[in-house]
Image 1: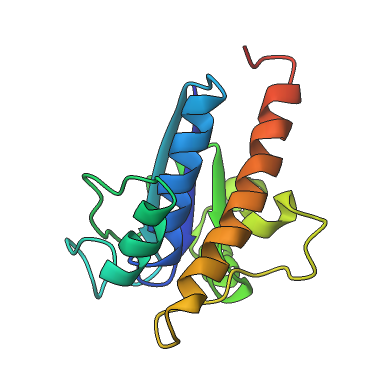
Image 2: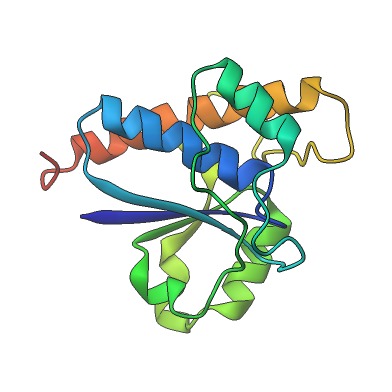
Length: 157
């Protein structure tokens, strides 16, 4: 089983959205994956996803059930096969914290959506409601790209 960790700063907006979207799309693609999210910071530890992120995601049919914020832990670097950062700040923080032999597991999530004109998922926390829909658009595109890549691998079933 492949294990994927989505990472943003506080684990209440972008990475829980990515977890919810990717979980549903992977299920629809008949992929058996371990899918989680975390933050590089621990300020919101134990909190549910932001209500605005949940409302936007649920309006598109995604479930955030059971999600609560947590901080990236050292063992995540060995447990997960792929660690996807939402932006370059979190990418840099993840690379600084991980063991050297795990650095190749860490990537920007939007690398899986090369047709997009952006490389980072912007943080919608301090913006308006439309920011959460924009995040969903980006996450859906990258999720589809990643699923296509996983399905194209010889070991996927």
